[in-house]
Amino acid sequence: MKKPRTRLPRLVGLNPPAFLALLYLGLVLLGALLLWLPFSSIRQLTVMESLFTSMSAVTVTGLVVIDTGADLTVGGQIVVAALIQLGGLGLMTFAALVLSALGIQIGIGGSAILREEVNQTSLTSLGRLVRIIFAVAIMAEAAGALLLMIVFVPDLGWGEGTWAAIFHSISAFNNAGFAFWPDSLSGWVGHPIVAIGVPAMFVLGGLGFVVLADIVEKRSWRRLSLHTKLMLVGSLALSVWGIITFAALEWTNPGTLGEMTLWDKIAASIFQGLTPRTAGFNTVDIGAMHDSTSLMVISLMLIGGGSTSTAGGIKVTTAIVLILATIAFFRRRKSLHAFGRSIGVEEVMKVMALTTVSIFTVMVGIFLCTLTHDGDFLDLSFEVASAFGTVGLSRGATGLLGPFEQAVIMVIMFFGRVGPLTLGFFLATRSKPRVAYPAGQVYLG
Image 1 (cartoon, rainbow, N blue to C red):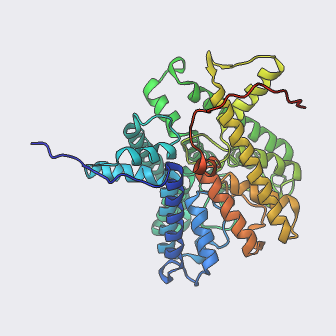
Image 2: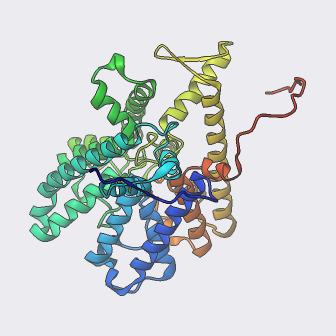
Image 3: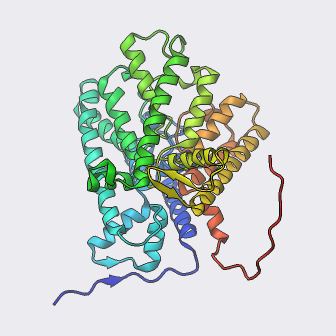
């Protein structure tokens, strides 16, 4: 007789986004405790350093106030890698896979939370998506680790080089940006595997698991979903724009590309044109970039990657829908169309809400940081944008921030990972209006 599957108790009292936010907050606190313990660090970390590092790892950001390679022991680095993996792929995703293996059903409440985490509108096919997420992650990270061993083992030896390859593969695929060296991967700026292989990993992780699953199943451009087509076209356009613009702006800058060979310039431009899409690694000095380049990078950091991915930002599809809505307005159209499909009003309203909350969050973050810190305005704005986009690139301001500014950055990192709309979902309820009001006129613009 087939053994009946056990069902988890039903979750009550909290809606899925609220419960999901609390799960991530709990992981941050647990990670901070583990990093604060003596086994994790060579020197005793302060409570703020432990908390900031844990928050940055769980939100797969990569902003640091310590030297990951010098200040942490191998045990501490393993803790950071585990936090990156859990935060990048998702707590409920891990829980669903483990419970499924144990024959335990997560029930409607747990499925609803999982649906919020992977940004789905339906409870169906969640199990299949979870399996795809893990299969892609394991294969990509294993392949990345093997490739990076070619880079690190000759320089660091078998033991240290192998661990460095595993750690940076996890960090790259999850778009975390944590590295063992203060200058990130600048020491290997011209290495083909670093220049091409590492960006390939964080671009793959940033596309989104729904997109990857769609590509694997459909294998035909005509059969791909609208979301997948928008993500692929939008990601390609942003990638080309980032690479060409970075190269054009920094080609003669002696602080970045100016003193490099031709191949190193091309390799660094490819890397730095792709990394603002929430990856956080760098192969040039970010603080030496021109102001114009920094503004370009800020725009890419705020856009981010794809939904149901390891990336942050408002997401590529959000930016595309905003552009389509603007074009439709100027063409006097009342509906949006792309690739032979229409985009509904509800999606446009969600995009507007997400963008509004995101802009508000970034502006408040910049204001609070400048309120108590008299540093360079561009550096602080860059820091806040990097935190919100869960990128991890920095112009050098992170280590100069005081406890208050670091707390602000941590809150913004948390919002950037869990989602700006989560706060709105805490109080949001769906209900039919009892009263219909007559239409009014508002003069806009």
